[in-house]
Length: 611
Ligand code: ATP
Image 1 (cartoon, rainbow, N blue to C red):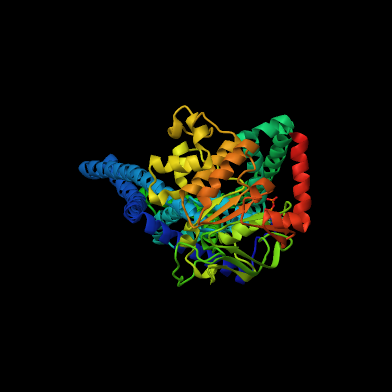
Image 2 (cartoon, rainbow, N blue to C red):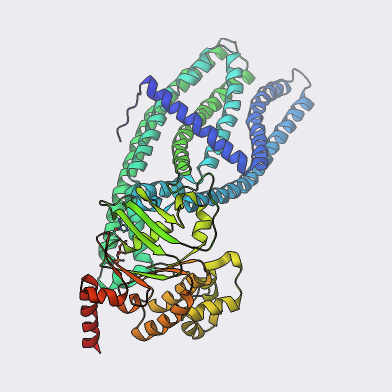
């Protein structure tokens, strides 16, 4: 938070150009989203800018006319009444314009907010997995969602108010100018300290906000853990509630105190600037009164001058306030454009190669080296393997060996640092990303439990094909999900999960539903990451029988710790520390007496002991 009140000319210029750039971008964005409403809003703003000036002119005419009428020096009563009526009309017009502007603004705000959220969603969906790996990305997303989303419009509002105040201010300055340069100069001089203070604290507040984003997110995390279902059991069992609550409160206390301290500091500085402004008003008032005392101004002019100067001071304060808010909000808007400007690292090729949805030869890792975006070490180095088309391949190995990473690379959630992943001899990077993913079905290690009907939970696997109930049932039978679904109160129409419905499934049952989702897609490549991990041994046997029929002709990759599952595969690879250490059929690997055989013996010994 290293902020100086006085910046170097270059820094001032950089700030001004950033401000102007963001203003243009925000205006273009709002214009693009709600053109009609923005035009209407701008017209009403101009009307509201002009009307106060008319009031000041009328004040002079009205008071002079009233003085003549009261003194009996003329018969201006009807003129005075007309002026009074005009006053009322202008007042009413101003009020009507104010109300109309409020309505227009609500409409404009709603449209802009929804469109902005939609664009943030669009961008978040466009981002690849690498984006979700880094805390800095979350900071950017957090600021875009929380602080910046409404800013383009707020910025335009501030700009509108600024234009409106400026219109009135220039007109007032014009009135004052007709009585000499002193009053307009005083008007300007009185506000110089405030201008610096506003700029200084806007920058300081922004630096603070950026510096504290991780802490704000951390507070949000504790809030989430305390109030959400997924964490409810462990929070209670391990008695973490108080500790999380305290952590939340401590973080909030730091954030709150720092913000209050900054605001207090700003308020004191602004008060000092205001005292200076009041002293300037004092000088102006004395000057006006002296003019009147010397007979250089009549009563109407004195009233007009005072009103113009007083309103001018208020307007100047508004203008400065608006400039400060615009400056502050332009920094928020910057976050939004930074977020919109992030590019995914996994890109669709400019001219994708054509390919068949079936797979003829297979998937090949060719000397592939990969490390996760924020990972310390490489998960695979110069890794080569072939997963032949049309048969079932199993990969077994200890935790952290890199098995699931292979499935993520095949889905092209990440690209290898060097080397290639080929499908039927073509580098995946040359294939249309969406179409490529469209020919893969995956059961992930931790499948999503969609809070939707059982039907939809399965249908999400192939929305584009518009599956009917028969298709859904077929997929459910293949995965064994039909049995738990048949026990639900409304069968396939039962809403699962606790967000919107009352029914929930066991982990193994959810896994079957996710498996049905993967089967529904009926794609050429089927990848199952620990498909039987949550199944009991009876269910596993039953499922394996079905899987054999289902996988016929497909290129299947099963990742498993269970040898009873792996032994069903046509070929088994044993993976350890990012390398394939053994390969063969179950019988071949047992004969070899290596890592697989040793683990097999241990696992079957466990089964024998437990049975
Ligand atoms: P398991 O059998 O436990 O599922 P696995 O063989 O499937 O393990 P992977 O999930 O492929 O292992 O992980 C391989 C290595 O990569 C692990 O050491 C893990 O810590 C690391 N890793 C996995 N995901 C990430 C990530 N998103 N960022 C950084 N490192 C990761």
